[in-house]
Length: 135
Image (cartoon, rainbow, N blue to C red; front, side, top):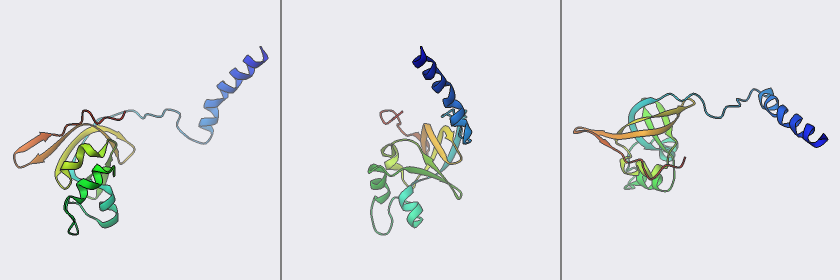
């Protein structure tokens, strides 16, 4: 009985400890859907060298190689970069192209895509996201 009481007391105190430092207890914020449109980038080459295209510094398909190796994909909208929370391989063929992403925002610059399209002069073409999902 004494062990049960101590266990219940410990479990009951956990939320107060978590809240004491100002941390949120709920790990998933209220999900709202957003839509962004911009240039698909590999975040490594963009943040280190400002590269926005697939080919840079004489390296063909550098952006594609970065995404295939697991570097996170991002969408550059004006001066803001949205990091895509999704396996980058799904976006490897579209580095440097205009994309439209619909998904759930997390914080100010993370997006979990639920729908994606590449946008060109002929209109929008869907990017296949099935088969890549981690969550």
